Length: 126
Image 1 (cartoon, rainbow, N blue to C red):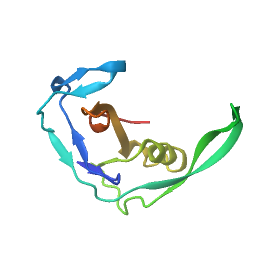
Image 2: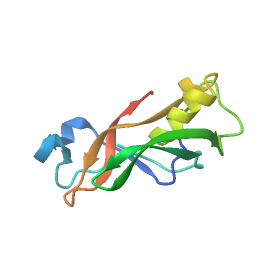
Image 3: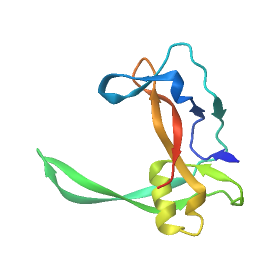
Image 4: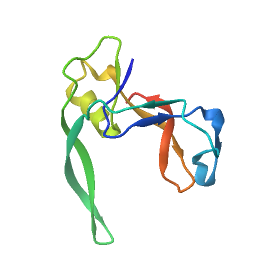
């Protein structure tokens, strides 16, 4: 069972309903509806620590490190998979390796006409 722990619904599309657009972006064909829309059930959050590693043209260059995640589901179901942000998945892998295999993030981002992400075609484990 898939559960969405991001702050927004996740739309899943069949890759056959997409085409490769500019810069290799996966674009949604006109008029295509999602195969599934997964509503949000909560939101796993993670704070980040910035470590300055240099400067580029006067602007600080930082490395982002996740801190311990919070707002995890109270019960991790044996047959459940939880979709979270990439940074949250990395934090869970680092701080909670005992449950990390149950947490996924989206992959295969699908873009709409205006160039924004409208959904995905895959899931990924970090």
